[in-house]
Image 1 (spheres, rainbow, N blue to C red):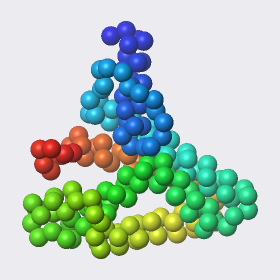
Image 2 (cartoon, one colour; image 1 turned 30 degrees about the vertical axis):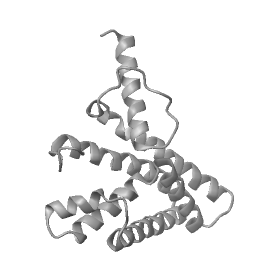
Image 3 (tube, helix red, strand yellow; image 1 turned 180 degrees about the horizontal axis):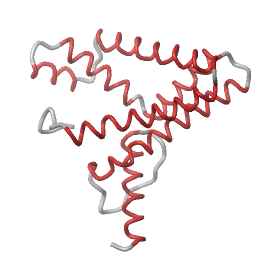
Length: 176
């Protein structure tokens, strides 16, 4: 493959990662569409884009004089909107399935159900609340460190699924 061909392939893989992990505009992919496994390397790049959105909103809100708690809330909201709440949806499904099911088959059935249960709601409240408070505290102490944390954590949280996809077998034949 030529240098230009390899660059086009890498660009298509990065665009696919952005399409899978965000709601950000990434254009259309031409044929052949790369397999998901080939774009795992770009998951942290998609995370960087999400982190930059949060960091930008945090910085803008703080520069407008908003208190760290409001700035942190806006940063988290921006990231959630940029991802279509992908992680939050997964967390709620996981919490409902793990604590709501008695056996493996029932847990997988609950996780596939689009409705949210009590465990999912509680997991989201605790997760968002802890992230919000931690970011607000960090932003009140050192806004630049808070912005860097948003970027690094967004990247790291996209490495974990890539590593799990590469290391573990699928829970069922028709899913990840």
